[in-house]
Image 1 (tube, rainbow, N blue to C red):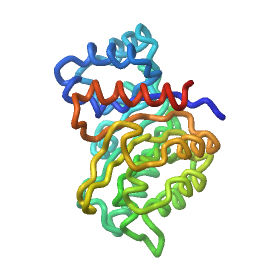
Image 2 (cartoon, helix red, strand yellow; image 1 turned 180 degrees about the horizontal axis):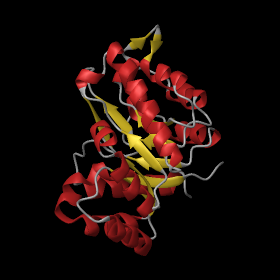
Image 3 (cartoon, helix red, strand yellow; image 1 turned 30 degrees about the vertical axis):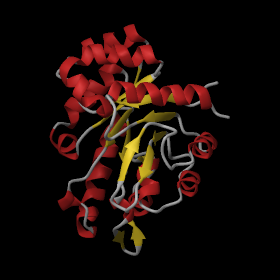
Length: 255
C-alpha cells in the first residue's frame, strides 16, 4: 500500500485557533499529525508560520482559499504559500449564487486563469467538493465531472471530500478510481445518518457510516498523497475529536 501522509484541515479547530493559533498547532503536532491544511492563518506572518511549522515538524500541505481571495489577492496568497513551503492552493466552497449551471461556466473560466497563474509559480490548484457539484448538470454532465473535463490537469487537481461524495449518493470507491492520478488530496470524513435524510452530521473517524478502510485502500491505489482529516462540526470538544480520529488512523492504517 502506498504510504499516504496524515494531515488535518485546521477549519475543524477554528474556535481553538481563534483563541490560540500557535498553541493549537502545537497540540496538533503532539497528536502525531504530519501535516496541516490551513483555512486562514490567524494573522500570523508567513515567516513566523514557516518557522513554527519547521519547529513542530509539521508539513504545510496547502490552504483553503476563498474564490474572492483567489480573485482579489492571488499574488498575496501565492507569496504566503511559497514562504511556508505549501504545494496546494484549494478553492473550498462556492457561494450559493455561483452554483447554477450558467454560473459554473464563468467559474470554470475563472478557475482556468487562476490555475494557470498558480502553475507558473509551481503551486497546484485544486477544488474541494461538497454535495452540490453532483446536483447540477452542465451540458448533460454533472458539474463535478464537467469541471475537470474542461480544465487540464496541470491547472486543476481534485481534492475529494469523500464524506460529501457519499452524502450526494455517489459511490466513493468508484469516484476515487475515476480520478486516480488526478487526486492528490482526499478529505477523510465520516458521516452518521439519522432517521431522516436531513439528520446527518460529521463524526469522528470510525463512528459513522462510511466504509473507511476500503476507501483508504482505494485512495492508496489512486496515488493519493495526503489523507486529510476534517470534521465540519464536532459534538465533542474539537481537539478531542481530532485526537480520536488520528488514534483511529494509527490503529487501523498506520499500524
